[in-house]
Length: 303
Image 1: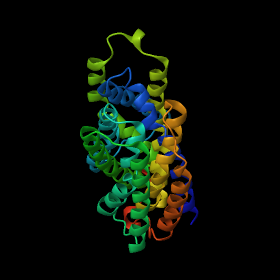
Image 2: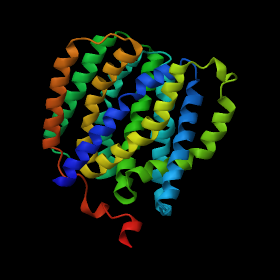
Image 3: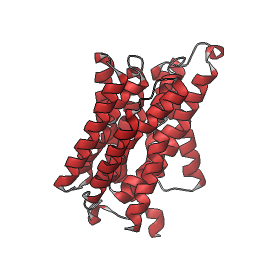
Image 4: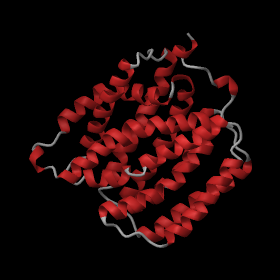
């Protein structure tokens, strides 16, 4: 029970940090190309991760962990940032919330497929109602979108759900911050080359708001958020803690209103109440976070 509670608390903190990602991305792509933003943020976060790994003398991942780490890299280091960056050139940050509301369902499905979790049937009912509430509210609030932007967001959600589930499963062995650090390092050579090729021709033309957005997605969205998020998923369960993402759109819409000046509807309060009830219901029927056989302590803790 204590581990589960700690997992939900850690997961909520991760969600709060992630809530600023889409507004920050929309600000940053005003002056940075989506490709440079994706690779540049990964390079900065990888440098931070390498510093943590070296300072704390972490053991290298085992050979069998390389493929799962590659999946994490493809899902959350490359795929989600790049696809959302491209999508936000066609849709507003508010409209992107429609798809973020579907992320908890995607994470739960991949948690079953990749994490060996088995939520109770009632869990899927609460999760579906929560996702429908978020998507319905966002559609009503944000207006129409773009087919190109919508398709890019769907692809981003699928890759992100897979990356979340794979990273959480791996976190049970390596630890949350270690997983994202190794995943970032795995992608660093490619990300560094692309960042050099796609960097802006003139840094003087970059506005301060874009720099703030770039810094946020590099340090908070790409590194610190995952420290808490993967820990939460590993301790509290992928499917259950993943439902906290239903709250992310409302945090994101609030930030979109404050930072980007996009209007925030009064319906947000009613929708948020429904979502909170759905998260509570999903938590009750989540089931066991993981099969005991899949969990083992990191190597450095067993010495």
